[in-house]
Length: 292
Image 1 (cartoon, rainbow, N blue to C red):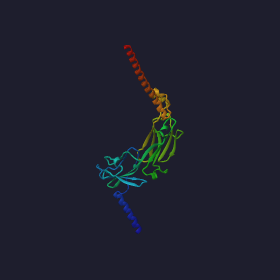
Image 2: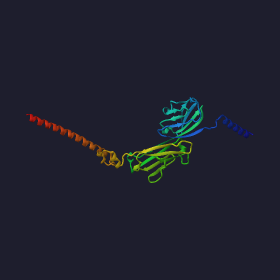
Image 3: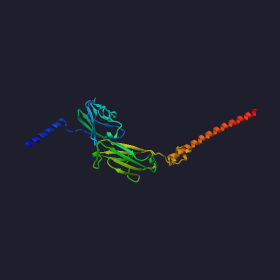
Image 4: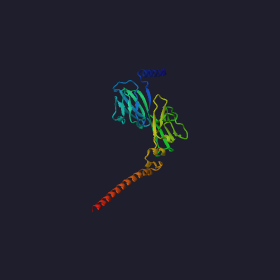
């Protein structure tokens, strides 16, 4: 009898939760942005235009950090994001100048009831190649890193939430061969080695996040601008005085090639002025002798 009463009480409790709306039913949105860019975090429910009943909270996984970013429809001044948050007309928020610390979970609440969960992950490209390697025959190393909303789970090999992919500027996936090599390929870090060719000058390389959720794919571009052009291109662009300087010379010798013609020109002008002055003086002496 006691067991039956206990079961009945549980059913009644569940029923009351369903009728009062405490069901945990809310929208979940996965947002992908890029470092330095901006991200729109949507509050999906129709809310009052003044947003006075709206609160936004932030949770950082791993660090167990919980903060309130917006309260009563206003950005909290004690938030470290206060200068980078703007509130839209429908009570969504926009984060500007995104940093690694912005990756995490955000919740939009109305009257302290959760409306939307937003999971923000950020994408970044970094290169460890020295600038002198940006030339035909050099090697370009690019690392694409995704800073996720919760590092403990989403970067694991068993996760199928997203996948990083390297593509060319036309949106085609790069093949793996002797020219393109993946030296690190994890769910949150894909490092690419590229054997550069002359045609790669000013070419864009793209890292893209492909997701299984209902979210927009995010991408970041890197442009490989060569420090030196090929000799034929350099000769067509540089003056005749510098066209004879090989482009593979060290910087000090390149400066010498540029400075030497300039120095010769200055010495020539100085010599011409000196000779011209001497000629005038000689003419004056001759004229003086003729007078006497």
